[in-house]
Image (tube, rainbow, N blue to C red; front, side, top):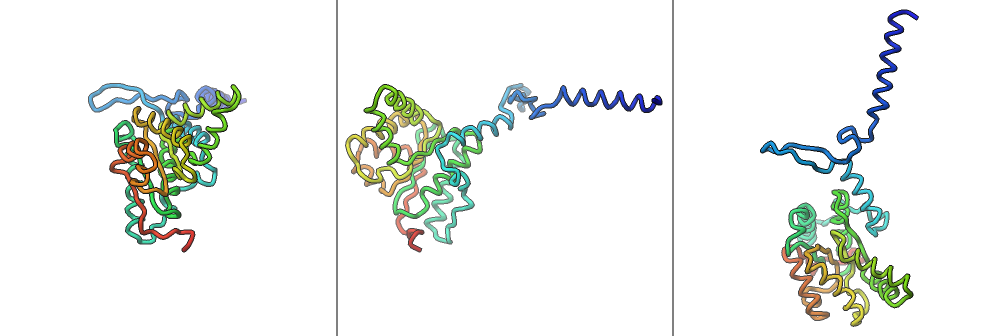
Length: 252
């Protein structure tokens, strides 16, 4: 072997060794998921690396309760058809999503979508949730009727069922963002109202944001249960969308 071949071999072996030592999924943080940055005042502090945000987003999405097809819904899918009411609805919900991190600890940190059926309330709510999931915000979607039915079945079951009830209630109360779809769809029994009040009141007191879609107007929510309705209305001040004129898209 000539000297040049020998040196080339050594160089290649060294490069291979370095590549093995420095083979990270994320070279930016070397897989620690934390990076250190310096602010404008020269202070050094730690923050999540982009890879950590992406990893969390994937995990939160898997646990979001959203159907796989609905995970694709976005504001781009919401066609306003040039109708002013729909344009206002889209602008309001998009504004809520983009400002969420800045208002999530405020008293008025929630979103209410109410009024006529078939107007896109669920699509807009899911668009908000999907955008925030991708931004690393833990969120949970629940269908009101399915949630209430499951909770009542677990509540009066055996010890295992009761533990599942406690675990589910804990998540409903504490997840960073809870989307309750079709609130008060179907019957409005005292037992139903008691369960949903327990969840909403906890989140109200702890300033944990909610998204609520319902066919009922704000005044109707008060009629169903004043304590519950007034809390939802207060939490959603500034971010309440009411569909009054838009035609049901299923009938177009």
